[in-house]
Amino acid sequence: MTTLADFTLPLLSGAPQNLADFSGKVILVVNVANQCGLTPQYEGLEALYRQYGDRGFVVLGFPCNQFAGQEPGTSEEIAQFCEVNYGVTFPIFERIDVNGEEAHPLYKWLKESAPGLLGSEAIKWNFTKFLIGRDGKVVERFAPATEPADIAGDIEKLL
Image (cartoon, rainbow, N blue to C red; front, top):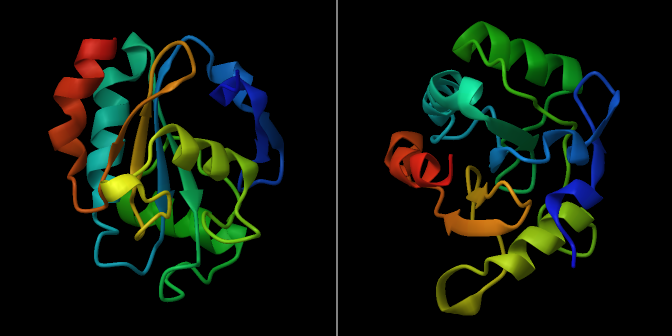
């Protein structure tokens, strides 16, 4: 059975990151974008990471430009934006597709593991969140509008 540990993706720096390195942690996977109305959620995501990081929690951000072209920047521009505007310290990966034929296998697995409303697998917008337990399996999917702080209780239950 597939788990998060089965995937390797490049960080914004271009260095490959084996997600198995996060085995045993509680993980929040989020497709992010820098020019979205929901972009201020970076602040809440960073707050969760700082609050629970020492207890075995990590946020993984995956930039995506599939929603109204709201993540058009280069890896360097994305990294600078996240650091300067929101002080992001959690791992951010190179831009990927989350829907369609070119969807990254990670997102194909996430969507199959936790379909959205009415069983729809498609990611509806930026900042869709997937909470993954210490066993590397998807526990829950959260809508884009769900504020990071509203997930804190779910995170605490898994820590």
